[in-house]
Amino acid sequence: MRSGIVTAVELVLRGIERDEVAAAVALIDEATLSPGVEDPRRLDDYWDAVLDVRQHGGELLVALHEGAVVGMCQMIIFRHFQHTAGWCCELESVYVRSDMRGRNVGAALVARAEAFAREKGCYRVQLASRNERLDAHRFYRTHGYVQNSQGFKKLLGE
Image (cartoon, rainbow, N blue to C red):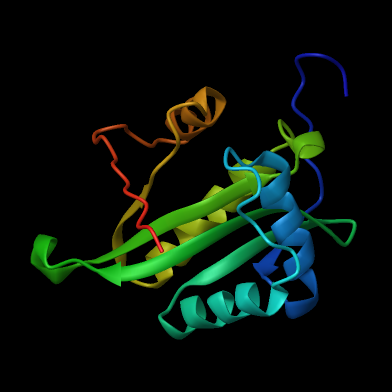
């Protein structure tokens, strides 16, 4: 790839399969801002989360290049009380493997997530992105996302 030229790669986009969970956890671990949180020894728990998300209409989408997981995006479908009780899609855990960034993997994931949300009858796709992730913020703006809120989180102790 020459400098300044974005190269697209051939991808397969689909719901994650059980034998890809370890690769997805490794993908998160590679880019996390919270080192030590993920536990690759607990793959059954991660798979249970996938099944739960699916039971509620969502999906954990993976991007595969040459059979390897190079990107992922979790889509959570829920219903608002507001907006006439409309359906909404929350994007979570959007990750692209570091050596695949800038090759349209993220764009393909987001486009497929938006199509999924439309198929589910959602009126909106929303996401939160950590303040430190300035490149991600530029990416989302480029793809039509508008920053109109400030997010807050509180970790609950054990």
